[in-house]
Image (cartoon, rainbow, N blue to C red; front, side, top):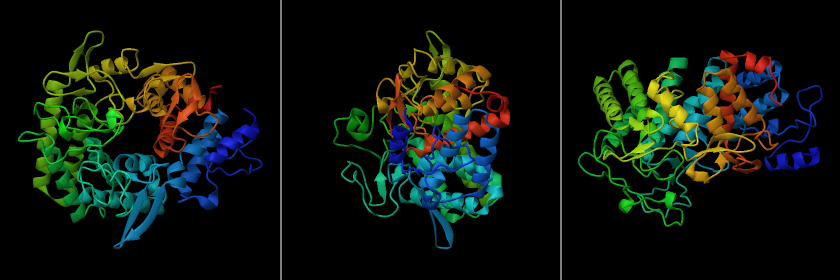
Length: 474
């Protein structure tokens, strides 16, 4: 691609055009990061990390990608302020001006280890936790929120919409992600200020919602419908989803892709819930001194964990015992994986299962094979996609998570090479790209994928630095 054409694409991303002399940047690697004066938040610790990594990564294109992607959440998506004497941070996903509980948690997650070097960064992340607490108290069934009571394009959905909600799709992981962020914020800082009475009330609401969606007595208060031609954007069964047998698992009417489930017991989300419940139990004991809440969390975690072993370990004809993506308690199961996290591939990354677990290892072999209907191989890359983006579209997130969860140098090298050659000369990750033509991609501004790429690079540098310091990937 000519530099002129490259810069035209970069301009669509709000790029600056000046090339600093004596730096990494060149006509081959122009400045595509948001100009300094337009960035939403700047962290000295993040900037130091970028400089360090670009000085040690031998492959200049990977170093350039890291410098663009790692700070993208801070550069473009955070809106920090304060309210009621506490930090409050609204985080958009990128090209959608709304805050998903899942995405906002994942977008700031890679910055947690840097908080000890940057008190303002810590305050920003504490603000995310505070904002998420407020969101859960507004509606624990909603997945995405407005910055205020402004209404949304989805306010005609057939569910109990409120003006503070952007969208109200019930996804188990929407309540797990804020717990993951809160728990590890506490572990990194020892700061307990975000975990006050309101946070305690939010966690009680999480437990209540999970129990309602075990559907032991009835279908619970939540249902959803949307007038649409896209079948995955609405829900069968009068808005409650397909039938389930109450076996202790938690119904997730939607997947983390925001697509409706087929069999409503979404297996990776239930694994994630077990981990999250045990984290709340620990925090309840240590911080809140609330043994009742801790006990409720532990009992529910044990119940869901036992149900997963009984109903979500299935013998596959080719791969032996594996975890299916969805089940319904009646014996039906869906064998696939979706790139959105929580996915089956991502379970060790979420701390939900050990990487060496034999059922996970079998599941991983299935996911990365043609037996997974959403695993695609093409001229440019191979990886998982999602029904959300239809066939033949690979998600960079799936390649990134494959590298993050791998213990094999050759596999990680292959992932780095695919990511390097599939960003379509933009300098950023995307939602998905065509398996044969990376220039055909979805979502030019998707901050979660960008910061996840940065997280992967840092993990590789900590654990296998030779893959970055001694090798190029052209």
